[in-house]
Image (cartoon, rainbow, N blue to C red; front, side):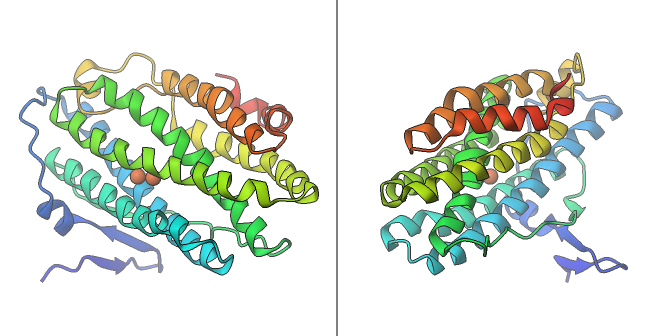
Amino acid sequence: MRKNFHQDHDGGAVLDLRCAAARRAIHLPDLPELSPEARQMAIRTWRGRMINEHISAQVWSALVGQLLRAAIPPELLAGVAEAVSDELRHAELCAAVVEALGGTAVARLPPIEDVPDHSDVGALEGVLRNVISVGCMSETVAVAVIRTEQAELDGTALGEVLSSILADEVSHARLGWKLLGACAPLLDAGTKQRLSAYLVDALAHQIEHEVPMLPILGAVDPNAAAAGVCDGGFARSVFLDTIEQVIVPGLERAGLSASEAWARAQARTASLLVA
Ligand SMILES: [Fe+2]
Ligand SMILES: [Fe+2]
């Protein structure tokens, strides 16, 4: 029987989703003929997505425990546990694409930082920092970026895969904003001030994490583009627009000083933002 989890020789975890990919087998009848280079690039792209989705499942699962410790009302918690299984399903769908492209849905997991518990502040304030960072920022960015990629693949089998992932990412982003909206009226001025200060780190982290994942490739071979390989240049502008037009105004509505935090985060990461 094939093992579907193991460790490599130096103790790093290796994610093996070949069985899951077989269970969710995807057919790509409309995929154009790919050169060997374009095929490898597409496999790397979807394997990278597979890893990111698996990491998203770990992040949401850490939030489940933190939200429970903060005694968040149960009616707000239901979607959080669902987000974990959604992300695991996304990883499996990306694995199925890797295998459909002729690749192997096996990847060594990169070192993953623990989701911080922010023990310097109370349980509610600490988990709200993570809700803002994960739901209001990362998931909101994911919606915009995946929507852009999905538009390129509209009407194709790969477009269908991205559409089903996108629908879940929309609900994850909404969940983040709903949690923040429910808690914001309960926060005193001091807590809002500390959360506003935290936004600088959280926004800078978005840039440090997202920008390197959106490499500017220039013109992408049209066949590679049909297999889901995107130039990061356009996605970068979508990312920045999403922060400025959606995330910062949303955080301001919750009573946080997000515009000022965004200006400071951009100043801190200026070297990364130069194309
Ligand atoms: Fe996802
Ligand atoms: Fe998500």
